Image 1 (cartoon, one colour):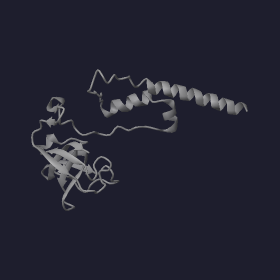
Image 2: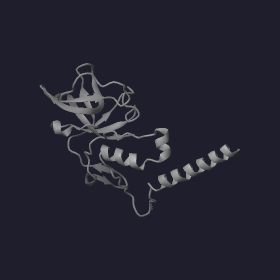
Image 3: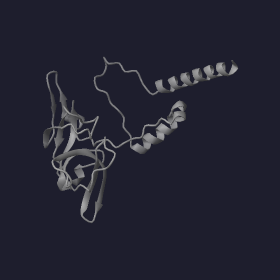
Length: 189
């Protein structure tokens, strides 16, 4: 009986502490005062360090972690987006519309029925780790859309390594800039 009571009290204390720690991360928002939400983003090392320091003990005990992954580059600035009551305008150079086939390689980010806005890159500096790009593969027919997971230089020059988010393996070969046709800047569901 004593062990059972101790377990219940300990579970209660952990629950209260976890709730207090989680609720302290969120501030109440008054929707009537703002229609724009601003999110603060840090680099992956900062996020990992802060998460390790502030991670609730229950999450640490259970081994629950959220590893930071590179996100696409921010190609569209806030001042390029105009939201009216009857339309949205995005001022974007070299914009093109795209749709996708159902290959499952980019699930759940891109799937059948999703539409995208893409831009045509002008040079290698336009492509970043985390970007989702369309490219012509030397190993498959058609255009492939996958995420850039690495960028480097070798004796042939600039290259990118790509991988579908839902694939277990990287795409074969190094993708050169002349193979990259478009960069995804918005996905519309």
